[in-house]
Structure formats: structure tokens, C-alpha cells
Image (tube, rainbow over the protein chains, first blue to last red):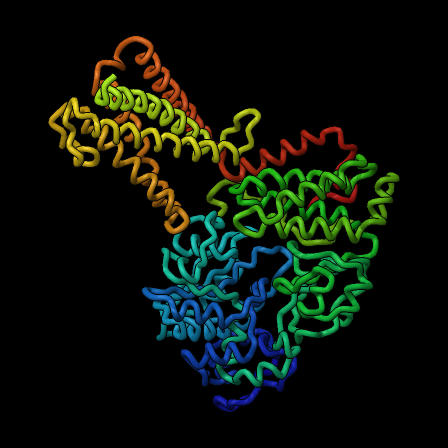
Amino acid sequence: MTRPVAPAAPPGPPGAAGPGRLLPLAPGDGWDLRAHVARHGHPRYQGEALIVAARDAGLTGRGGAAFPAYVKLAAVARARGRKVAVANGAEGEPASAKDAALLRHAPHLVLDGLQLAAEAVGATEAFVYAGAGSAPWVERALAQRDGGVPVALVQAPPRFLAGQESALARRVAGGLALPAYAPERVSERGVHGRPTLVQNVETLAHLALIARHGPGWFRQAGTPAEPGTMLVTLNAGGQQRVAEAELGTPLAGLLPPGTAALIGGYHGTWLPMGTARALTLDNRSLRRHQAALGAGVLAVLPPGACGLAETARVARYLAAESAGQCGPCLNGLPRIAVAMAELAGPRPRPGTVADVRRWAGLVAGRGACHHPDGTVRLVASALAVFGDELARHGAGRCGADGGPALPLPPPGALPRCDEDWR
Amino acid sequence: MSNSTTFWYASRATGVVALVLLSVVLALGIAVARQARVPGLPRFALTELHRNLSLLAVAFLSVHVLTAVLDTYVAIPLAAIVIPFASGYERLWLGLGAAALDLTAAMIVTSLLRGRMSRAAWRAVHLAVYLCWPLALVHSLFSDGDMRHGPLLGAAIACALAVAAAIARRLAGVARRPARAARVAAELAVAERGRAAAPASPAAHGSNR
């Protein structure tokens, strides 16, 4: 294993503008603070200058919403009173593994970004919110650092919705990781009612690099509208692989052969493989097909797998992961999931597709969080893309010959009691 | 009927109607809180009914208070509307009414500002209804003898029974309220029963991992 050789703090880019900005070229030594400093040097932009740099760099949130990072930074910086900064690595999505990979292989980039962001907005306490699997890596990295805004680790429960901002704010404050009913902005009232900056761990890692190399360097990768690189989790052949790719990369180069691609994870959109391979890894390109990058989850439906059966399994998982708070979600998603299971079996009743479409219209936009919206987006795209499969099932046949393709936790890992949300 | 007795009767009548409405509003509010289903009424309509009847109750309550003060047969000082026990006439029983009115005002103000305050704070104030309603009932029964006999006593007993029944169902519901996950699982089971005739499940494609 070769450690990258770099003299102290060169203000230049590490390995030019190509991919490999976040994840160490030599995996495994990013957790060591000295190796981290040797590779990345020290930040040049701090405080307000960093917020301006984030704006000029065009950095967007990598947690799924692609919201401009500087807007949140500026909003919390403007807010009054005691403030909190949180690095969100909850990654409740079973098909995503990039946050865990980043926290394992380059935790100091995330912690640098969190520290810089906390200082820039004037936060007096900071948290890393991450799943149990990431906790040891975060703790090891935290033990090597001192000074600055104090950082604590809060363990995120393995719930699909654990990373939703208001659920995060409640969990960090000691409660259950449940989305709030009232649509409050955490930048105004978050953890303990304090103005709270919540950024995905990958966003913070990019911020830490922008603080070193500046916005111009950041824009050397990606497209003018969506600059930079992003981590993607590729789910194919029963394997999960995390890769870093420039925004605007042709999807044809990322997606292995298959019949369809799921873009953006379990709240995402199915596209026929031919359509997906003609697109590029950026929202401008995906939007034309009602798809979005989300948190960078790509999944491939292998030949011999049934898209309806996969969607039915995911829909059932999403229904079971509902916080059970809002009527449309609590009552609607189970019905949709069960109807999808019927469509995934042989000879579904003729009215079932219409039932699913009607219920999808009824629950969309009616929840306190986006869980119902994301779930019906997935289901609706499955009905659109797997039309041939629907017809085969209607005739009592199914094209599938393989086992499950998309990763899901075992049924025993679904929530059983309120404590499972802590 | 002199002007004075007009106010007197108006105050009595609106007071009785306000008590009945408040009792219904409380029972409906409890039904909303325990997410009960009223046959033929969607849940959002239950919430709307609770809100609209409470506004109607406030209207009757306002007329009740106003006419009681305007009535000159007994002198009730203006301040006694909001300051409990400031009235020389029926000091204790009118005082309870004033206290109930203050609590009602607090619930109205917090409900109007609900979008601007935390749900917990709004709920804490709204729980004052459990103090407000008994105050109003005792005030109604003892401010004057009218309600302690005949059909009006029957109305008061009916109100008390309705509220007691609603509270009992609420407490029973709290005792056996299913956990969040059980609620979700129950809905999944309901959905599955609804499609019990469905020919097959996706298990045909291989078991869940």
C-alpha cells in the first residue's frame, strides 16, 4: 500500500481535477490524521469567505435534495442565539453505502468540513450523526483531533427516515428519530429548538476540499450547472460498490448490463436501461425523464429479474418503515404495497393497476415528510417501465428466474417498537 | 318583558347552549386526539367539526357574558368577566365562570397562533380544557338554581355523561394504544386481508432475504 507523498500544505489540487478527490487513492489511511494532513494540507478559506466560496463553487447537498449548500450555511449564520451543526451520515437507504464508505475511509475530511462549517455559521456545538457501522471509525478519528468546536457522535437508528432533517434534530436532542408534523426549518428551529445546520457528510467533505483549493478548482470537475464530483453507490449483481464520479459522466460507463436502472434509490425512478444509458450523471439530464440523482444510488435490474417483484418488495419495506404518523402514509402505503404484491404475482385482478394509481394520487404531497411522495414515485415509475411485465403477469407468466436483486434488510430488522427509532 | 329581563333570559339561554356546545366540542376533541372514526365522517371532517363548533360555542359564550354584565338587575362589575372572584354577586360561582373564560381565551389565542408555536406548547395549553369544562359545569349548576332541576338538570347530566364517556374511551385507548410499529403492521395486515382473494404474492419469485 503506497501512501500518497505530498509536502506540507501545497495549495494545489490533489491528483488534478479527476475523480478520487474524496476517497483516498490508497484506501485505508484516510483515517490517520497525519496522512490526511499530508495529503490535503490546511484550509485557506474560513468563516464568511468559506460560505462565499461554497456559493461560487456551486456546491449542492449530496444527501439527496441537491439544495445549494451555501443557502443553508448563510441561513444559519444569519440566525441568532446558540447554534448547532450536524454532519448527517444516517444513510437510512439500504441501497446506499457511500456515507459509510466516506466515514470509514476519509473521516477527517468530513470532520474538517463539519468544523469549518460550524465555525462559519457560529455554532457552539457539533454532532456527527451516523449509523452503528460507522461509529468506530468516527470515534477513532475524533480521538485524534482536539480544539475547535466540540464534536459528539450520535448514533442514528437503522431506519429509512432516520436522516430526514427534523427526525435527525429530534434524535440528536435525545428523542426518537421521527419526522416532525409541523414543517419547521431546522435552520431556524432544529436541535433543542436552536438554529441547526444539517449537511450530508459528503457535502461537508467537499466543503473541506473547497476550503483548501477554492471554488475554481472545485469547478474543474462536473458540468457548469452542477460542478464537482459525487459519490455513487452502484447496486448490481448482488454487490454494492461505491465510486466517485464527475457530475455529467455518461451513465453508460457506470451501469453494467441489465434490463432497467433504478436512479436515485428507493424514493427514485425506474428507467428502461436503454434510456438510462443515454443519460448523464446530473439532475439536468435526469430531470427530462422525471428522475433525479438523490443520494447517488444507482441500481441495475439484472436480466432474469422481475421489476414488479423487486418494486413490490421495496414498497413493502417502505410501508413498514413509515413513521406511522400521517394518515396518508400509515393507511396508503400498506395498501399500495399489498396491491403491488398482487401485481407481482400471476393473474392480478384487472382493477389493481387503477387502484395503485388512484392511491398514489391520494397520498402524494399529503405527508409531513416526503416518504409517501418518494414511495409513489418509485411505484408509478415501475408501472410505467414494466408495462410488458404487467401484461405477462396478466397472462399468468413472469419473466423472472432469479432471486431478489435489490438490497433490503431482513424482515427481522424492521421496526418493532418505539425504541427501534432511537 | 322589560329590557332587564331580556338580558337575564338571554344570558341564561346562551349560557346553557354554550355549556352543551362546549361539552360536544370536548367530546369531539377527544375523538380527534385518539384518531377515532365517526361513521360517515372522514377524519378531516371530524377535525373541522371540532373547530367550527368551538367557534360557535365561543360566540354563544360571548353573548352569555355580555348579557350577564349588561343586565342591571344584579350588578356584575366589568372586571369580574376576566378576574375570578371579583363579583360581589355569587362571588364563588361567577368566579369559576370567569376562570373558565380565561382558560377558553388562552386556548383560542394559542390555537390562532398554532402555526407559530411548538406543537408541545399548544398542546399543553389545550389540555386546559380538562380544567375549563368542569369549571364551566359547576359554574352553570350553582350560579343559579335553574339548572338544578327539571329539563335543564337533565341537559347538564347528559353533558356530563357524554364527556365522561369520551374521557373513559380516551383513557382506555391510551392503555391499549398499539406501538407505532404495531400500528404500521396492523395497517399492512388490514391491507392484506382486503386483498385476501389475490391469487399470489411475490414470494413466487424467491423468498425475502
